[in-house]
Image 1 (tube, rainbow, N blue to C red):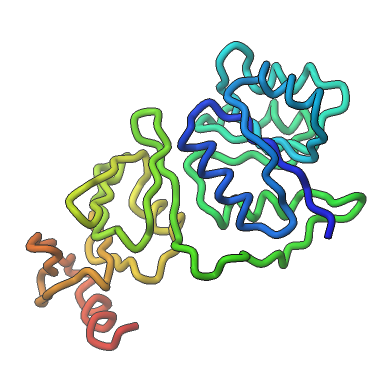
Image 2: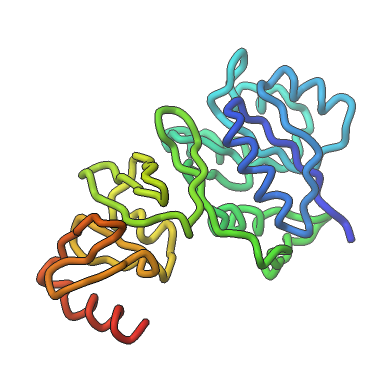
Length: 238
């Protein structure tokens, strides 16, 4: 089986680890290394064969797009960044795709499916090798990429342009998302919308009434327009 050799160029260790974990889940990809800046990546490319770059735009010493312009024969490139304004310039440089942080595995796989193996499109039906692995996503908090496991989420609270993800054990992560966008991003059937300001993990609900649910002693309101849907979901297990 021909595998695409992937190099991650990312100065945030958590983000680099997240990309490595995603790469290792896809049978047709092979992780060959990670570099924290463009100059280290240039040295790596001189001594190793690489088929795909996962390239962060905001790098120390030399920015990702400037680095890409220096390569005479660049491999396939997937850009990663928290800033959408560079998308057009990236596509002008013939990149394969543009991953806007934070992104989950489904979005990663969508980008990977655009890669080519030889002259053929990367197979879109590529399976995840470890079906027992826990679903997780990285979220941007204070310029860090923080890993959150879906099964540790207790509830999510809207803070207008941000959401607060409350986890098992009392920890929380605040990241820039609107609640509806967050719900779509995770696409997790265990998360139930109970209010315009709250998503709750169904398996973490300890008690509920017509007007509220209780999660680890915290009472959360059920919006009037959500009452029938919440009652049906909790009583029937839908």
